[in-house]
Image 1 (tube, rainbow, N blue to C red):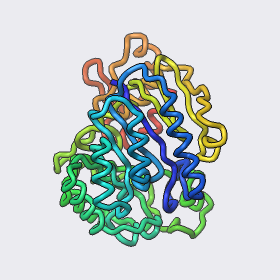
Image 2: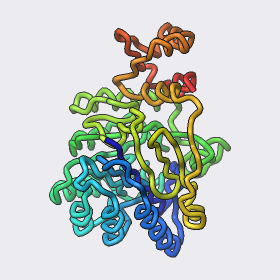
Image 3: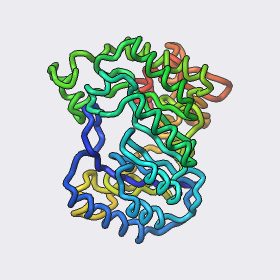
Length: 356
């Protein structure tokens, strides 16, 4: 069954590592944004009843209770099989959690990134490990036990010992799902730009090297698997997110809000990228499609631990890179199924690019 994504690009602060089209914007813009988003939902043609809903950002946990209720009331299918809201640790109250639950939210993803204070301060995050623990307890007490905790491998000042501390906290809090991302370095984040320019800000000189980051990721795979959270996608562990599986399996979804993408009835489209452009232009739904759906199936499918089952014509078309990656130990073959090897996961960007 299809899913729905709602984009809320507003934050209380912009983290140094963040390369999303989100940020700190005037309160007046947020009010206008809600009005346009409500209108887009009201005018939506629903070709099916959605199974999942995902509110991403930005920081959707800062949406006012009444606004959240109004937005979700415009989406058919409640109660949904899964309805996720992303939240910043320490940014919500018991009253808010109760309002989320009553509005249909049954899963919360906490952007923890680290449980170590020096690492958090260099990113601009203000929470502590104890705040995260209190948030997890609060969510469970209010009837939302389906929780994801995010970590980033490669933060400034991160060491093997501090990484173990973060993994210790994951084990202690025992969420059903965890995500582990390796730090992305590009010009779209303040930290990435500083690293590329060899600058001193945001702890850019204290970023672990690629080998150290890879080792931390492999250690996370080992420990999370031992905790009963096996890897099912390059960055995701434990009880799979029904909504995110739709992206990796190329199922249909509708996106609403700034920079939201949609895929339905064989068509692709996206909304204007920034909050201001979305408010001023409305949901203009610019066409967005890949010329080669077959290559996309490899690109997203190989991210899953289950891998892909190539069609006969695809074995021929991709014979050269498949044989090369099998020989190099980056791909594994199980009958007619292909998947990334453990080493291939670490070099997944290089492997996946071959199929675009």
